[in-house]
Image (cartoon, rainbow, N blue to C red; front, side, top):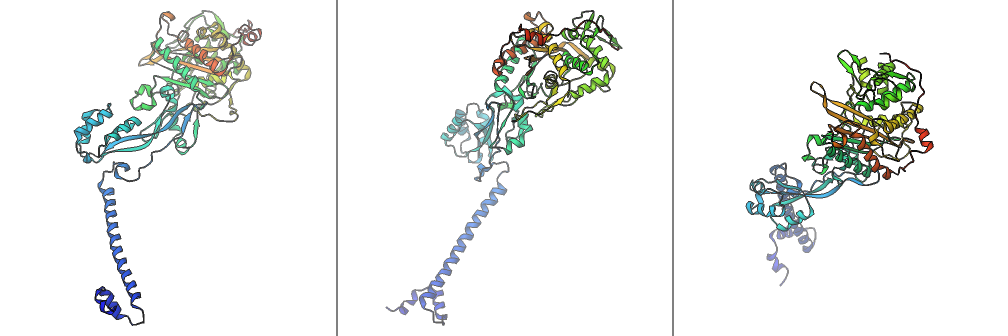
Length: 579
């Protein structure tokens, strides 16, 4: 049969095209061209339908699904939670890191049997409340949270259930492997990994941007443990409401340990009380009592107005208007400057301060950093409370630690400057390589040397005897202050503190201990003052930390050591303070 006889089998549009061809083209060429156009038309229709389906899905996702529903529930790409750099101590011990975590949610509209699903979930997640889970699954909401941060075992258990409508959101969770140990330093983050306290907050941008980096702190986890452990024991021993402590490197200002009690677990910061979240070492400001006599004595000696051989009349209390300044353990006689310091005489200290004068005292406190917030890398920093106006009566009371409220960290930092040769180094929590900053000179090297001897005298023969640990040449100063109440000072509510330095022949470490309202016991003969409570606590801390930092035991009776620590001004040079 000829090709023309079978023309009736060709499509109509091809026959029409063939009849209109007049340019000599063959019939097979025209047939190929026209059938290709037909295929393109068919494909265009199919693509248009596909795009309509996709567009409809996008409208459904963007406009009809709940705004609170996470991307994982809608089938979109899941947003990745913010990762953070690790926090480690000075020796590389991990303080904060990230772990992959899954959180369970549900599309309640897809749950066929809310009662059965809730019962099954609670068998795998026994800490959940079955009635609460059932109500969520029966709510008909497109998205409800069931439980955040599942463990790997819990994740596996839920997967095995195979319940349609359940889903998981995977993200990075911030964890603190050492729990409460350094909670007030590291701080913590919220559910979205945003820093909201401590280093986590103050260095939030750095920790987020430097995901592949590690932020090294000055803390030593070993010293941190010793400090916190002894503070906890002291709280229990003396039934104190709280406690705080800090260990400083006197030569650099580095904070080696910092603890405030009660504390909290940053892994569960939402469960902590406001008291536990409060950092007593950096945020709390207190009138700390006689530890300020370190600054007062150094001020007098460095000014040149006061000499070691000078003596002051401490035979009777000082009465100013309606105030009376008296000694807790009065000697009722003239006292030399070393005796004023050793016996912690308020009367002698007040008269010494008057000789220096109000302007000189205020300037000295300012140079020591006592009139401004401590420059530490934490957001929780308290502002000192200073007298305004600063009158003569304030000059007298500030001399023995009343009328000027500062943080324990400020006192520790100031004491470090007094005994390290006279240079103030701002306290820091961030470990830095290279040479330490030069610091700011606040007293002469000669004044610093004398103050080391006086602080050793306090522990050897004065109010700080309970802090003595044989072989470690500890120096220090006690401070017992009455807390401010609604109508003045509460004599029954004490803040007992002790600042210790060791070894006194070449001071390297400052240890400050604060106990909030300690109570006396049989061992202290009922006394709750610093000499009986805070001083022995500081001694125990030093006994534990000295071997860790490599401080050798010394022979305290060695002739060179005794000569280096000797303090004994000659008689004479008697004077009466200007008041």
